[in-house]
Image (cartoon, rainbow, N blue to C red):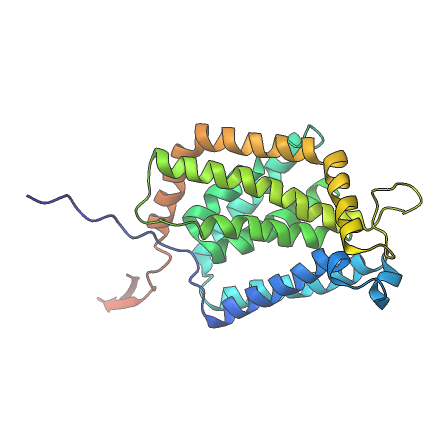
Length: 283
């Protein structure tokens, strides 16, 4: 008596190679510096003297690095079929974002990013998250120095779903609960890192929760915590709650649809041609 057929290995739209991994590590390292420089730079650092200009500097660097990562991943396996799926999902995500914009953080695009990253893997997930945020920024007019930070944070958000354990074995209710838990925590994490991108723009004379270049690390940490509690806790909570609700209610059919599309696309099957009767046919 057998225990049934073994679970089918989940296909990936993009297989990360050494160059892709190195590029992702590089852009993530620069991203950490770009988000965390208020805490990483000592009070006497010259960077603190340009607190209002620093986000622009890091934004320009991140745009270039995200482009490098996308190009590197494309060289390692982002073929025509993967590009087509990337375009469809990015367009869907960009269209979903304005639906809840300005309404207590109710942003349905986050649940689509979680499920897409889970099915299509971390490499595809990073590119999808970045491009979706870029497209939605153009759609909503949200272009500014914060946009590259949004692209990077959403790339991390979507890539993280692709790094969750058990993609080939964990199915059903257990998988949905794991994705919902990830979406809940990652929604707060996204809001927190994005607070870092905007926090330094506050005028220190306007509020005692603003970044102070001359303050100590503990003092700025306290300011930042107060800033998060005062400005974004409710917004992040709404985003997290909607991600959980949509994942638990719509996750099963959408996961099935994404996996069916991935199997039919056969991303990992190379295209070859056979000659017969004078006609070339793809196999």
